[in-house]
Length: 226
Image (tube, rainbow, N blue to C red; front, side, top):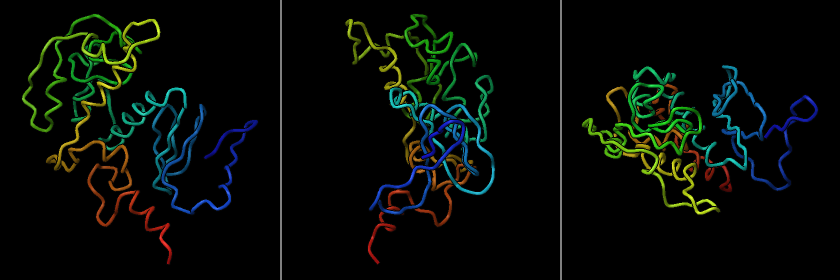
């Protein structure tokens, strides 16, 4: 972890007795963080190069929203980029919203399917969306229906008793993230949660890396006594 202090980044020393393990993810609090070989999961840029490392910029008070930022950036990484108005990848088609993409699917963390601006989770505008279809990925049929923010009006309420559209939308959004078995014809796996939490197992192209095992298994091995 590399918090910035008076203009320079100093690594935090591990606590005494902490188990040594490979570094594959780093977190920063409200500050850009860049390490060689990483890809950023929020708003800054990492240099290309030496280490297979994902960089997470994490604000504790926004952890759910930043997990969605992480998911979007990770999927963009594994699908070779992302532009909201170009449906050139499966990820871009999933993240389509009517305002930016011209058609609506599940949307992005800032733009729901019917959103007209950033953070527009409570917009009552009705749009035609294929969001339901993504619950059956990869068996997509193009099915669609019309809805607005009332689609994610529950279950959480604000202190004033009104729906917490922000929290509910992100919950709704994550329930639509594909988690099926198998792979696309191009090699991407159908379970996108694998990319979010087991990113070490995959090449930048999204294909599984031969001979690589998941993070938890590697950590267990590293902690096992000789």
